[in-house]
Amino acid sequence: MAKKCPHCGEVSDADNICTWCNKSLVAEKPPAAAPAGGGAQPAAPPGAPPASAKPVGAAPAPTRRPLPTVEQPRPLWPYYAGAGVAVVVVVLVAQFLGMKTAAGPPPDPADWASKQSMTKLLSMSVPGNYKFTTSGSSGSYEQMTVKATKLCRVHVEGSGTKGAMSDVASAMARTMGTEGGSSVAARGEGKFHATQGELQKKRDPKYAESGDMDAWSFAGMPAAYSEYTTVKKVGLFAVKMKGWRISCTGGDFGYQVWAEAPAAQWDKFKPIAKKILVSAKTNAGG
Image (cartoon, helix red, strand yellow):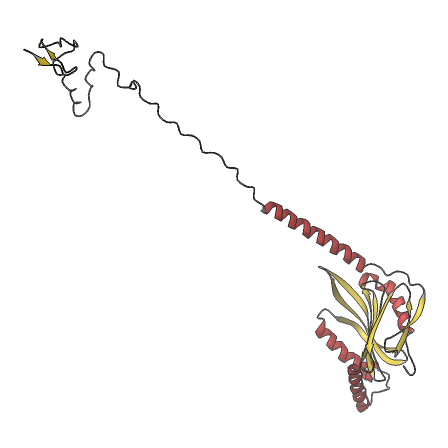
């Protein structure tokens, strides 16, 4: 009985073996399913490749290429921070050196010469190697400043406003009968000095006077003075100061006079400042 070969498709004259391709004409049974609950797998038919073997001609599994590495930019903040620290150090060093110079000792005075105020109302003897400046307006105010260093100075400021205040103080002393008395605090210049001291304390909370006020004579005019201490800033640094504040009444102006230096330099600057102040005089017809 002829059968069609499932392999080559030809009609075989034999019933079991194809007369054309010599392959079995008996249909192969599918492999039996594994028994439930596990157990041994049925043996593979002879000649079958092992289950773990790769099929012939199968393409190899694709390999994953590593992603290209991108170099991350370095953060800039360490450079900025380092530059900022360097700037701060330079500024602090510069300010410290500036403070040391400003708070240093005054140079020895030399080449003394007489200097007039801009309004020509006052004059005084000044060392030529110190800086002298003046300003003013006739009948309004006048200033004279002598600087040995940035912080060692003698400063004179007079104004018509202060003159009016000194007139009031003198009038009070006359009313109380103390004008011309032995107590400088009870005289007009003393009362004017006390009033100016209170105003200075409001302007400068670190300003403090030591001891009682004493009598002085500035440019031939009656005056009172007190020693004081305060603190001045030079950049970021504080410098303790010491000096004299002098209040003077006379003529149309009232005067406040300052002689001051860093506390460490006051003993050296004090005799120089006193020589400048003692030399002050009014100019007749100025």
